[in-house]
Length: 148
Image (cartoon, rainbow, N blue to C red):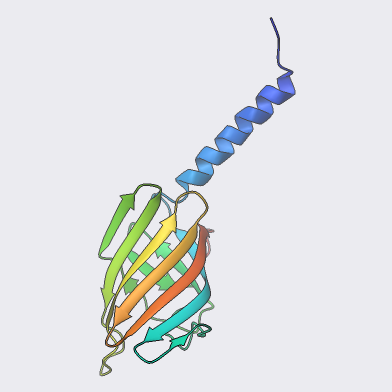
């Protein structure tokens, strides 16, 4: 009978535990912190593929609080508005958040949005559409640290 070296058995066990904990980080049971990468703005006349998140009213860094159903900017963000999450669904290996945002008072900038987060690696894609404009935002989410 072939015996595996103890170190190999322990290493395989630790890898399995790490993978399970990592996948569980994106299931909505604990907060996530996110970072916005690329922002694309689309309207009927043109596509702008390098929009600054602040210009689009998005925080560059944000926190998703699943229990409170809110997406809020990080403490160091220039954008200070928080957004309510209307629904949280788990579809295949993704967590999908959806909502509607009225935007800034007195401005016709309300929109509907959907944020999909991969449970495998935290890769996030936001799509949002409003009055004649749509946005696609690429980013990443990670487990939140205590002081965010």
